Length: 134
Image (cartoon, rainbow, N blue to C red):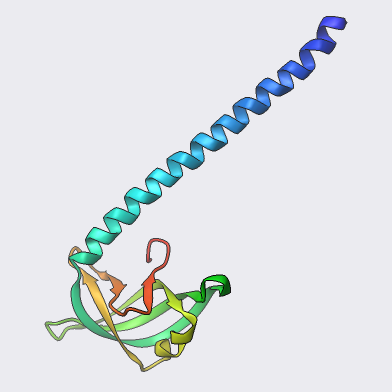
């Protein structure tokens, strides 16, 4: 009986240690994966083709007042350099002071992903990709 009483705290500590280790390791792996994804996204944006788009609709996903920004889902009518027009949508982080620039009918600068024309990036200094941009 005494042996069981002594083993219970040891078992609890061992299990807690394993859980903490896996959580920390998982966060580290997620951070590394996030850094890789951000680098890949940055490279794709650098290759983007400059164009213009008319805002069809925009909707706030999340307000980030501490950052002076908001995450916005923006629906666009893209005008490619070839003159072709097509719809696209994206998630952008936008400075709060610039939200009025995403009202329907406003024209914004964008970059079109050369490998996926439906993937568009902000071409304005007041907007950035939010999450993966989709």
